[in-house]
Image: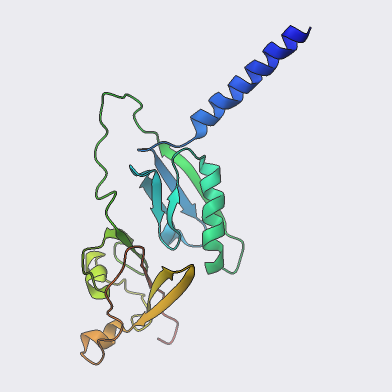
Amino acid sequence: MILKTVIAAALLLASSVAGFAQSALRVGDVVEISVYQDPKLDRRVRVGRDGTIAVPLAGRIRAAGRSPEAIETDLKKRLQKNYSEPLDLTVGLLEPSNPAPLQPRPPVEDELKPRIFVTGEIARPGSFPVARRTTVMQALANAGGLGPFAARKRIQIRRQSGGQEMVFGFDYDGFLQGASAQGNIDLRPGDVIVAPERSLFE
């Protein structure tokens, strides 16, 4: 009787470990992130060679060895401060990596390069490599420029520094008209440029 109990327990443990191994993400996996409150954050990202994924407003998150559900919980904690209502966010495995050890997977573009993020009313929102010197205007140009409904005078640059968030303003139209160059700062890795929607009377 005792032997049967031990064997049953061992089988249950093996099953649990196998289930965890199947749900744990690996380098090369592609996950899909969906945010009901802000579809501009919806994206498909690949787990990089360093085991992380990069998400605007949340930064880099450890993904390899963790389940999509764990990443979902982490993302909600990091992003909730930006929204007034409870965040409805999901993370799912979209494309598993190729487990064959002798078949190299296609390289992921600029995975390990420092990156900045551009989101909001942008032609091509996403993450972009940051060069030794990249200004706000250069980053916006790389992202295809502002969308038609952007609040052009209220562009924000958000930066995490020492555990605190710093926010810089940038007047896009003022810069183009030569009235003000203030705000066209040099970006740092991890900076997030946000182009909010303009209000009714802007």
